[in-house]
Image (cartoon, rainbow, N blue to C red):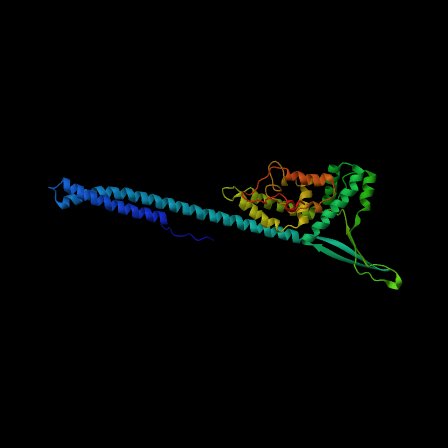
Length: 342
């Protein structure tokens, strides 16, 4: 907590005070000399009375000025302390929201089955993928669904929204038999298939070890991700909507950079997909500019996105928008990849 500091006279006010005293002394000296030459018959005591009356009024006037300046300085100091207290309240709430976001991420988990083909032997292991490691798997599932639906529907916008809806809700969006059969076939798909560099050769046969990671698709992630997205959106909105007389645009960007530093690249890709599928359309619209003005998906590279002109086109279109930049910052690009022409 910021302690209230006692009022202190600053350098300018001290100079003003000294100047007032010098002027008063000089005026007193002139008045005494002038009055003494005019009123020769008056006694020194009478002259002192006259001078005292004149100077008393003058000093009272200058004293009033000093009191006014002191009160202004105190009011200014009180406003600074009040503003510091408001900033402390804001930061306390914001850091608590960051902590809750981290907890929401840590609660995310997926069950992964890893199968090792070792010659004629097969070994299966089941383990959990936790925390921010799950976001790449989520993005891969959306990609698998999109690539399955697109050849059947032809419409890229519909296919992507349908793919995200199935990923999120775990329910098919169409009763067409061919559509359902195609999706049923990919309920369990290989998302990772890699061979080791040093295969062994049993009995003269070249049979490499091979790992295949399986993840059951179309389980529905709404129960896990609804709270995650609501809280993340609320955190960004809490900062972005602060009055800029209280927290400047540059300061808001710095606060949100702290949040973005906690987000993995694929976490930001999922935010982009959430917006593109209209589930999270409030991320970037006429009222909110969280992707552009506040760079919340700054670390998304095209290489992380589904290779499709519709999706990459939406990504590129964001660059064409008229968005805010920090003054005197030369590399304040929308996406980090622009620095490398990515």
